[in-house]
Image (spheres, rainbow over the protein chains, first blue to last red):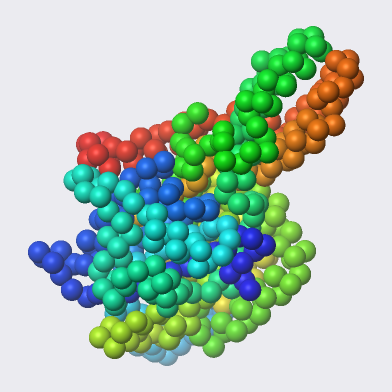
Length: 235
Length: 213
């Protein structure tokens, strides 16, 4: 399946937003503002969702009209119609599309199984918004079509799957290890690099002793601790 | 809005594709998947964390309730989402220089795709069809994709070295230790926020706190 690459999964979700307004602001704009105001890095609610490598949210307001000139054989050929009349030329231009709904787009690259991941989203997505209110995942999807019927994790999993689109091609240019494994490895890379620099030119016995202390402190095989927290943005 | 989270940039591009040609694109993607050597060019672009192509049939936009208006579209749509390190220009240009024919193959049937060479029309095409990200999360903002891959190599080598050499006599230990450092020298490196990352993170923070730029 193209949505998986080894243990890594590409989740692509388009949730239609209701065409309505609240206090003169469209539901799409309310949703957009909520996404924009999400805390970032360590404080992002996604840092609490287990096994999220990278994820994003945005609003798809509409599709674009292809107005730019291009090397498109079909339309290049159709340009010949301009010899006959301007209206014939215009008829041969790309068609104009508009979406009737705006969509909340959620895209995530994560480790593991989809159901477990979505359950993790439902259970762990939490943050304090800019007004000091505690929010969960429902705050972002609140104005999406039919989301008012979602009341538990099973309902959330079912809902997201209805909005899910399969990837035709998922390219993994990184690793497909668990996030815990990736973060531990990054911690070790950082710490061992520093260790190597600090112990340059020292004697064999001294380095060996320091190395043993380093291993005891860094615990390379203990994925849980010490490690980098998800979303860590400062050294 | 932030397309940047630490060292990663989130690109979202949506382009129309003639609906009767989508099967060819899907076949191309399927062939690429079943013959990993065809993705060799992409693999050389080691600045990519993860990327995906999604084709939405013109009648395939999720419709969850009869009250939701049904989309009536002339074209199907192709979504391209990528997570990469570096600037927009570096990324788009590296695609053009590394895999121009592969790129053209993937977008070939998209309406008015200008081809990846020359660069300027291709830049314009991507900019025209790109959508900004509202919230972008990266589990390791300080690390590049190469850092993640290098980190796994260091972790494995470190565990093996500890098992095999930690208790050897000091001189033998030092020989093995130096060999470990030699073998891993391409994978070391202190990870810190780069200037561009710091500037963008600062801009995001100010926007979030509503501090005037």
